[in-house]
Length: 109
Length: 166
Image 1: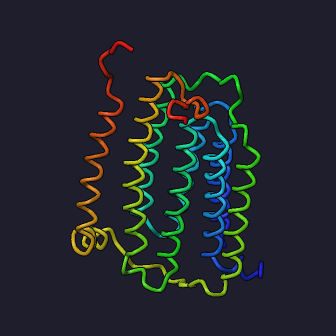
Image 2 (image 1 turned 90 degrees about the vertical axis):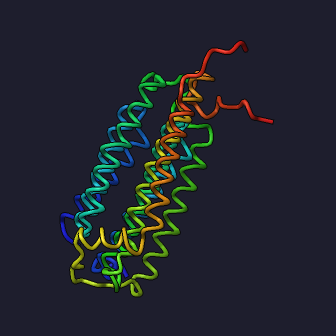
């Protein structure tokens, strides 16, 4: 099975994307700082984009451009998400003087 | 699998791993930039020139700069006293490892079924532009609206408010 995986380029790209997704997920789960959580989310989105592009390249109909378009729109939406997310972090820092998620407990019941 | 692929994959994964593990936030931002650059080169390696250069422009040009700005505006370069990892860091790492194990298992199980198109797709930027204003024109307009709304929203959220008595 391993030799087949080495011979298949698409499987290699999918494994890299899976590992990058896991790294991003770990970053979003284990860090205290809100900015680092946003970085982890960006890494996860990028891993998904790598999957889209890899399937577009090795899929049967690359001229339909489906995976490519999905990746381009995903990049645009991720840019909007980063702008709003970092704006929220700056706003929270102005109100509570912290970016640590443990200390953002104002809405805690 | 070529040597170039292994090199680019190693650069990307090392950048992501270092970004998650380092203590100083500015170093994390720089490592994230390395990971973004590695991903852009992987896109180029996959013959997706447009997506690769869009990745360089948007992620290295805009998102990385935004992250550095946010770190500097929130005094993120000072190390926190309680450590950089949350109390439940072990559970987080276990969940991430489990997710990777499931994904890798699924990929390795279906390696026979994945498509193996080896010819380089003959797609030019002209084709992408035609598709964007033809078949995908409605999503394009929606993304334009979304970007406008996000820009205005980010400015309003981060705008300096007047001092109110608390």
